[in-house]
Length: 255
Length: 288
Image (cartoon, rainbow over all chains, first blue to last red; front, top):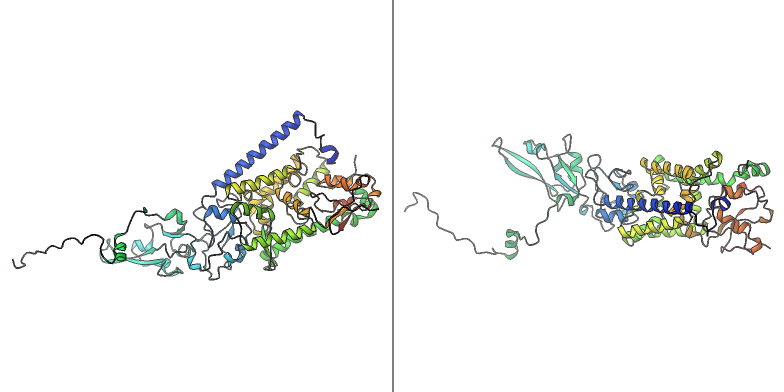
């Protein structure tokens, strides 16, 4: 095809065909661009529940404005837990994620994935892996969790890298038997990194404890709320007058 | 019937001189891909990452200019490595010719070359021949959307990224883009993707304004007007200013920024008009 002779019509000639071609091309182009923008914005809200971003990942829309989809974090991970997302998987194509139930984050102290990130989509300010907040573990299924059934399981408690801080065991009376104790795994959000070791370790066929996006899990108190006992601690005394102490009278108490 | 381009060159010069740059180019394309695949396949990590951003020998970073621009407008200044990386790429392709990337490195090129070859063989000549400046409009839109949304929206569909990532990381859904581009170039538009739409190439072209490496029609007086170079050139408009410029006092160097330095014109020319020329600065010298 000799383009210079066959492909170009004289620049001044305006033909119906030319107009239609140009207009059609522009319309197709514009609708494609509109569609792309829509796809991009729609899928930028959050990652699906089964996917967790690597440590240090910026909050989701910011992350998608920074991640180059180069996979250097994938290559840096010594445990090979990270993958780049497929198109149409629900995670933005080419961006890194891991699936805790398959392979959780091993929380390397050097955080090689963050160091490898060329763009800062994984925040280089994260230097202490214990401060990573990839998600939040939630004991989602209290009907099937063995601890709630009254068994001594505690695997999630045992495998937690932030042991006895991110997950503690709270003792409760087993009201079914009336004489046993439940050892209930309880997640504390101020220590949980969302590494997913607990979800991986859960012995059930489907994990009862799961790493979920923090935003999907965390509630927030109204700003005007004050927790009385903390205010009391701060002030050193009760903020309202102590209630009257009345004399206790029991039968046979002398009167 | 017109003879396929290159046939006369093979007769006159022999097979190797008529295919030399084509073969080197395929070796280069396969070599770049092979280099990236050494790691995952043989645990030999000469280079990590992919064409979007990579790290060579654990020292030299490289970042794709189009990704860098999107990054910059979407979320402000990135971390140092991405900045150094784009600097390396700017210097490298500033020296070698911006669109050298397109014909010697980009994984999409073999696909669009295949489409062009099939078109010539099957005698398909029709299709949309939109203005080649459309790619600059695409480039502006890609950057504009990134700036407006704060997301790298183009990276949802960028076939260059999709294909390379697919090959290196085994993300197979990117193949859809490959098939799409092959069919688009073959059936709908000659040189449609690389020549009219691709914003990556449009941006690399901007690095080619002052490049020392270029093709030059050094023996243009020997041209027998067989037009073989025009038939194989993906950016045929860059040839004539140099090839036919003697009368206007224009030098023989092909200085058009759209030239991909593929060197196919050197191969197929039976009159041995063209050769690669490395010269500082990039001026179009008039040969006396």
